[in-house]
Length: 324
Image 1 (spheres, rainbow, N blue to C red):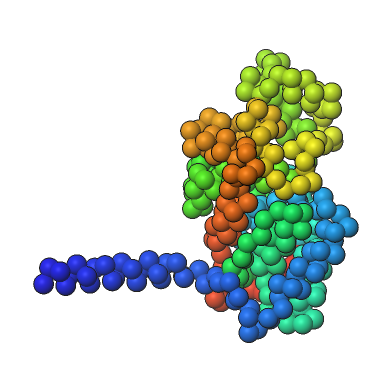
Image 2 (cartoon, rainbow, N blue to C red):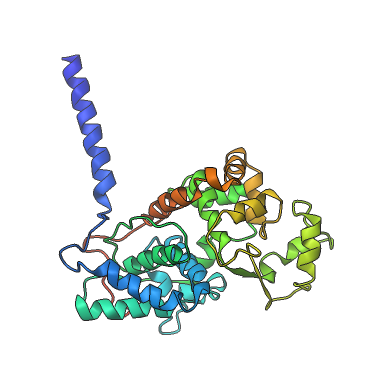
């Protein structure tokens, strides 16, 4: 009898776990019957733009990240402000995002072939994957089936998005609250291998770290000197590469920069203050033994599950910037 009860408990636990795993309703091939060419259509639209402007890959990747960290992956970062209410897109961390035209082009092409079927947030997830792979980065299978949210609030973006000033404790709490692990944190930080940043995102590390006109002792002092030639005090317009010399390539050079205390942001430097994240940084320095590409795909899939709307929740927008 005890054995029977034990088996029953095990079966119930497994059934519960299986239900949780599938409760979000995401799956590879979700549109297999309703829009079988969805991935090819999105990839063509992405290729059309990124092949002409490879620098779009970085903001397109960030766009997916910024969407998922506010209200979950629901396409709310794509919405325009309405009736005087400012949307996530208008928040300062999102004002440097570019590439909305890529999402719109993919949506337009999909609406011609299978109208009202594919959500804008699924398009965003596919575009982020394709943009990375087009610049010789990794690829991964994207689980689909998300629906679009109807709410987008500026203040929520300011409150919920991780900042370049965060320490490790804050980062761990921010990622953990969304179900992401410490490994996801350090792996997704590797996305800083792409793109540029405005000087104001790290200027305090160069000129006024503790409010006394000092520099950040956790940043290489020679690198600080180099950055000062580009970024003057209170500079809000100049941009510099986050991964100098490699900012257009998806590679492991970011971790090399961090290991040398040359990560631009305080949040980059924070990866060296925790034993687990520091060990990961150091493990990626030798390209032949790097696991970064594979790990990045896994963490992007994990991030893509945050707070998704499925089933009859939300909507399928006709235009990604406008609620139905």
